[in-house]
Image: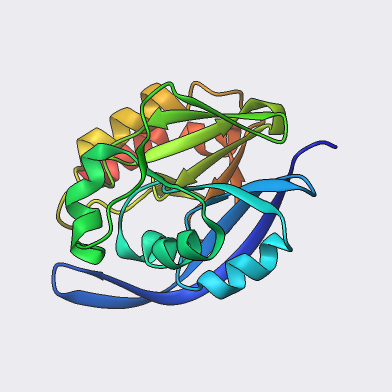
Length: 209
């Protein structure tokens, strides 16, 4: 059975640098009827577990370690036995939210994960966070971008651990080289495509300066 993408929206709070904001997060589940991975366990472990529908959870993959993307990860791991995977450059952010529970394994640029016969290639795309990653699934014509690329532009870079020139480099050099028909499934809000976003690169750069 071919892998499919299931989508769940959960709601909670993003907190960083002393501020708090109410947010809705996209949770992506990739798998078939027997096994799956979760990309970004946000806010509600019980809702994510319910969406799995009894499938074996092979991994909880974190696109980055802002609290709104990882706050439910330990509870989901405890409920399912799945390991939590995070790029090591985001450990300082992770430890702000979960000081007593480390991730189980590291993500590395170029690493390939397989679920239900589908490959997910890890692309290190720093800028929004030092250890931000995107996950390219060529067999599904999809890239999961977390908060690196949204419909309409790059992720925010106005807070600690973020850097605008770096996120522009990540998007230009890593993401915009993907086929234009590639669906961009984001950490918040609506999906888009690489082809829809690529023409706007110069505008983003000018806006950022």
